[in-house]
Length: 333
Image (cartoon, rainbow, N blue to C red; front, side):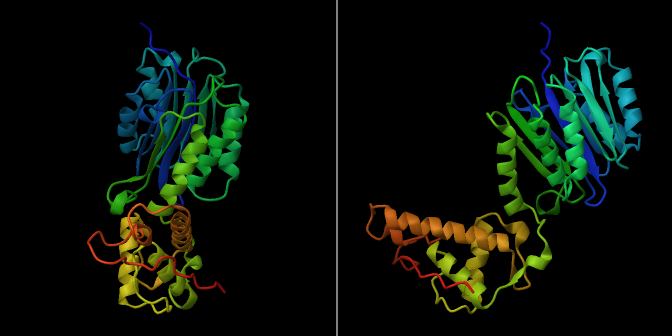
């Protein structure tokens, strides 16, 4: 029984400024992230699609690891493959050289566009404007490789994308020391396996990942934890049950310990700082969580007496509630 081909559009890219290599992809195919994208820091990135030959991924990375140029990687992989006429391939190497291949028997519309540091490719598309739009978006979008890859995907979909519709999407980006805790190279590895709007869902998941796991914010936006900023943190931590002291804006050891526990429990390890400053994004996150907690207490009938006075960060042991019912938030200046 022949294996069905699946329509896909993807982009492989290298960003010299961040030292990262990545792939972004969308398809009317379940779990496209399990098949198409491959990336390795210091080597390059590969997207294998159409009647995908999954061996192109590891074999392509092995060649890239040896310093073989992207164009030669494409030539070697496809020339050795009797099914190459039904394959599509995009490659970017360690130096940012890009190349692509579209087999003569790929289902229409199928084609690719190669630019400086990237290649866009797609099959079973509504037309060539899909890959053209992806290329323009990657070239013109400000930001790092993550912003540009996501912009390219969105641009391709705006031009019609896969002519059969949408189902899954993925974003894989590698850079040296980019893994969790600085270990490994997997900077971002996000997938939407089955969704009516996979690119929008991928962007939603990425925003959460960016907030908690990445450190891409401008250091000039950091705020000193003192005065109104310290008081606001104390208030929100108290609402959530992490802090039981006075709301006086003094960033004392009890306040610091409460904040450290919150940061650890809410996966902000990559944004912990020891210089007395805080990222505005964490302040916004805390403010939103505290507002939701206040709303819950205000509009939810208690089942257990006093239960609504305890935020999610309160001690699990016995005793009295660890936070006032709804502390009054200090006015912002």
